[in-house]
Image (cartoon, rainbow, N blue to C red; front, side, top):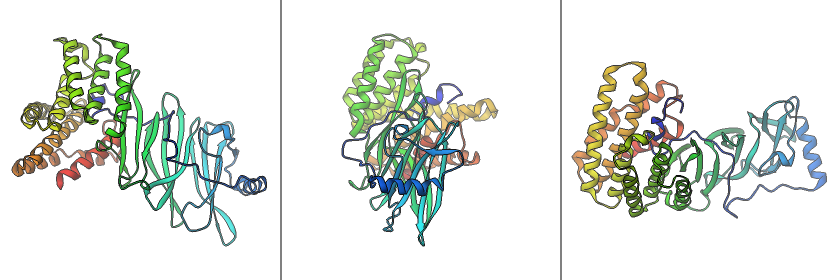
Length: 405
């Protein structure tokens, strides 16, 4: 985000998806198998050369972090193999791949993808959409700092569909639809502030990436370790970056259901801060209160949680009203940030009222959430928004879907 640091905390740990390093659980994913016999490889190369883009050559094995430069596999499960070949454009910062399909004994190119990148950070042939459909997962590494853009490609009815998995600096697959009914889940690190990166556990809602708090505990201990290690650099120093590290640690502990640990961390943080809240301007005290409310709610300390959320709701509704009255371009950013904060507050209160069977309050919260018009704001900009990024807006959609139930 370019307009200030406030947006970093609109929804816990905002992201600019990116990825360089990645890891894959041993045995979870197997590279696509191809016939590596010399004659067959030479035959495939001869076929591919006729379809490569102008001034391009096949990638060498050392141009890929994982996978093979040429694959011979059945993308659409029709019993006949397609050819996938990765290439680079000579004298350009471009790499990509083509897909060839054979019909009536003739090969034709049915797809071509070119992308500015340093290398191909990942190529795997795995189940992403469902347990019966395999897709080609590809990561285009831009740089170690920016990370890689991840896409998956599915062949159906003779056409390739491209779907985004975001932009990540680390990427680890936690579950595929073949394993169980949870679907495709991955843990990933995205670019944060300074040396403090953001971590998310992400799953697919249809074809859209969303934050996944249900599966977060399966990976949460690693994320908690990451932030604990970062905090060792700051010791008991009071600074914006240490405040950010504390916030992300407590957020990870709450999402991992390490609730007593989270409340202990919050107490330790408050002891360090004392009354000097100005030194933590990256993260407002309201953000820490929100995490405390989530921890109380998960512990079924509903009265304490409700008191916190009610105070935050009153404050943010008043703030949103004042910003809206200004009706100027400078307030637009803050308006959208306040709306996302309020949606999160409404959603946490909705879960509490649902547990307490307070139907009237549930309906009131539904109405308030829908009246924020977050999705309408996003759609007005044709899905391009410096505040509502892909992960934020898809997670907001999922929250609104649950509120409507």
